[in-house]
Length: 326
Image 1 (spheres, one colour):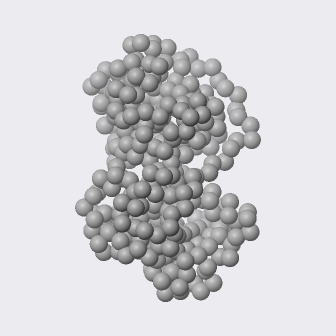
Image 2 (cartoon, rainbow, N blue to C red):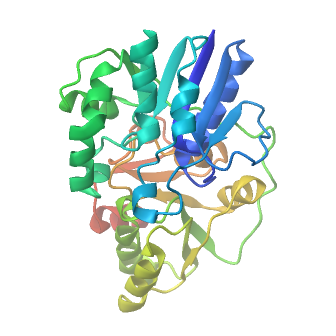
């Protein structure tokens, strides 16, 4: 059986979609399925995985048009009669639509995983562009889907809110558990951390406000925000920290692999103040490192409280501050 997973981009190691789609493709190959991953990118880049194929963006030199992700070579590659199943990951760009065209012409089944892109916080960004994309191509592609895959019940409800009535399989993301955790370092201060994209939908401004509320009560603690900056939001957060006179607050760039594992292991608490998240891989990774987690109800982690390994709280700095105090 030949399965094609198609995603708009695969070369941002900080993106949860990059990790989850790559690992999903690898995992199903271990089950004997001939799975391949198609994405925009430099075709000359080495494919260490052995199953990823990158295709050029036809308008990469034109920043505005490049965001559509047009790739004639990718579209043509999908019209392959040996393909048995198409699985789209994500929405809005043309690589998230091309497989629907191929599935219709070849009469093949089509799956789609939204990866949180139908959530209210995600839809609020560039809202008019997404409404236009829906009218021009995305709505038709979604109506063609034979089965959706959601990572949680809330994401399934988001699919239903768009009037889509096809079957939905609720399957959480998986993570690679470390064979052995690194030795825990004793740091000068106890540490609450947040790792992920530095983007407004992540609610990091609320974490900073909560931290300022409690910092005087916990002089032996520090707050560390780690991740890739998107749209200059990291500098906005630094300015917010300065305005609020935040102490022992630091904002750093992305970390990966062994370094990330060490930081998660050394942390005393992981905070996810997100406005909306379909899964949040970093929560699972933190728990794998035996680090307790505070997650807002913007992510589907009610099991934190059920299993006594963290807190699942309301949105807002007040709720976060109260939980930090507890």
